[in-house]
Length: 305
Image (tube, rainbow, N blue to C red; front, top):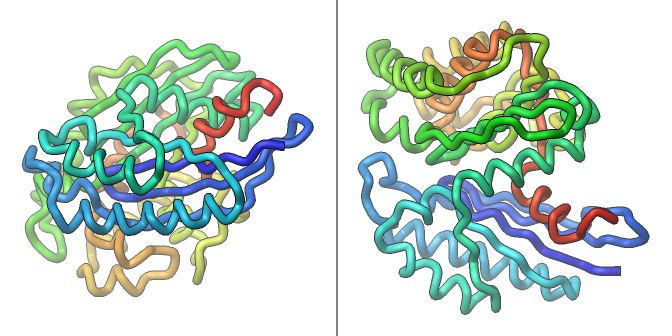
């Protein structure tokens, strides 16, 4: 039996998965997700802010305590914010000291590969059919296209819920021109991605997609068992976008299924998702609650997992 704590340090969220591998089976023992906004300011191409660094380090200390209580080794990765920040070492050095392990800053291709691995282990149609797996993060969006489990395309695009909110949305509620700017930039970036023709299974991973699924389901509290595997129809996504467009941040903070800490960036994330659905010419998104941290677990656990 081996226990491992995998940590995904993103632009917007810091996530923990603690699991054990026994006799070829993986069992989750604990999961945590905290919105730490490490990459606040990423839309302005700035460095990591002190407040975001301190918030994220405090959460890592909590995660270390959980891992030690379970006797688990720690494996941590960082994504877009840490790839781009000129002062990334201001975070990485104390983070390594806290965790007792280096944080691996992964490139977009590796991020996409881990995302795909998690999706392929979750859904048979990803492992056996034609699929596109997307991960909309705070600073970037990863797209992986595969046929029968074989990856044909990996792309990392500079589209993220935090990035596009900071770049385009200045008013509350957002102006129609601001939303149009988010959609136009998303469409422009996606135009360079050769998505296959339908039939295609589109799988959505990470906080933007899982939050929109929880909102569509009207969940008073987040329930991964209901969100994982939910099929979010384009019509339902458009209804959520219409609600978000018409509301202030204070109103969004009270919406069922929406973490108040995500209320300021969810509209941009939803607009990115809609543009992807349109570009893929599909009618729904298969929602995956298991992201990079799960892919990292499966990678470290090996084929026996």
